[in-house]
Image (cartoon, rainbow, N blue to C red; front, side, top):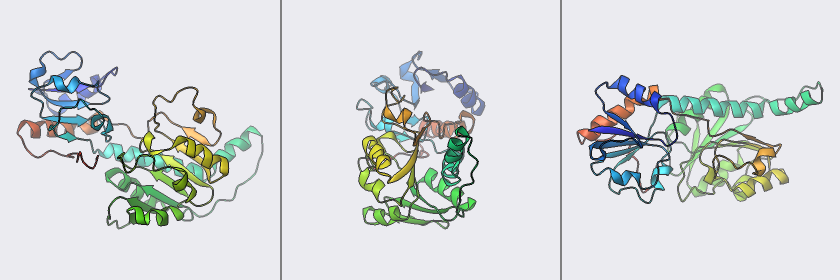
Length: 309
């Protein structure tokens, strides 16, 4: 039996090396050069072509190459009944915490203002409140969101969270459900979106949501591009409801060259790099799930298809 890596137009040699370091006997095939589709037991995918998963009649598990699984859920040709799993990796959580911390500190310490002053050769100190003054609101308190929120709280920020269902957290107050969303937003200066993308969360970053934040709030979207209503963000920046935004994810990627976000002086853009899967740290989990699938054992990080994560 074999494991197939399906990652179009990418060099996956580092993945092959990491996986075979974990299990030298593991047979790995790389799409599209798969010699025997009947031999494929486990598919490791990112942005796979539609219909390709139907070519493996003995498939027992489909794994995302990252924490996100929308590319799998949105594939109408995906064979039904095959379990889906995602990666929950300490490396992913740490790199996401680094990215969000950097974005929050840049806003809080007013580094953008200082860069503008540099252009003008202007020497002026800006007033900075205590780090506990701005409220950071974490939308999405799953594995990664809770980790990031805890790191921000440890650093000294005042952090609160919001999620679909109640959850206890020793370090932060977590609000839940639609009935507590406004309360969550009203105390937020820096809004971080790390929600999964579901029908309920699509377009959640809209004008109504953004207008309920504290004055001159800041948005960091590291969830999914479809969480954000792009025209509403532009309106909120124009009206002054928001002072700026840091965006790592977009509805269309790569972001089209003509998109207004590129040239907006209040928007900072990164090319979906906030948290990238590290093959060396993720390989152990993947090989473990391969062995579990081979033995029909319970899988790690199984996706609930109905809830979307």
